[in-house]
Image 1 (spheres, rainbow, N blue to C red):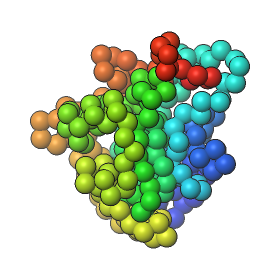
Image 2: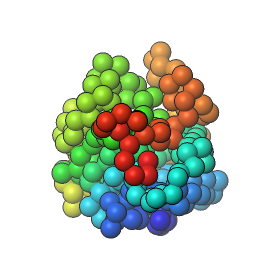
Image 3: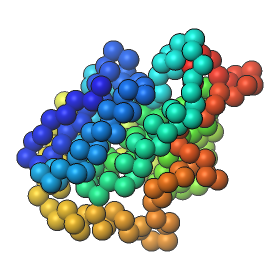
Image 4: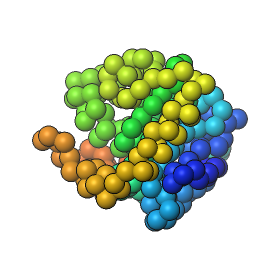
Length: 243
């Protein structure tokens, strides 16, 4: 579910369900959490890089995961919650290379990167409300920090599809590079960070810029709502099979 490769102090993590556009399942969440904890605890790892296999970064929650079974929402929330806690509490620098679509929870994962690169042709969409779900994985927390409250509300409520260039203009990513150069540039950047003062990086990540509140590590989401997928909206456009 998550491939791991080490290069010069960098732990490269690749979401590996290319046939499903790296859609997120409980199994993938467990694998990602384990990989993040491994990277955080291993002293030989000084920076991490997250990307997706194939033509997508991640299409978000796999809506077919549960089939006809009634999902255990609370258990699924806990899986998302601990991944978000691992990402928000990560002391080592995290580079994210968005190689294709990043939708819903996939977009959330991408935005947790400290430095975010996108390939030409990549795209971003919040997606949640279009399928009757509440934004999860810290997205409703991250977006106002990155683009301001008004723009965040627009992105969350209307869920437009943003090109890599539009994401760059909004500050969602730091660089847009040709697709064939994405991993080369992302890995070069991660290796540069791996050669730097990791303790200073950790302290810098904990100190919020300007007047922004510090990153929380528990109770993510507005009004204490945890960061997993919301229950499907019972209205005429909400829900569908699974989540």
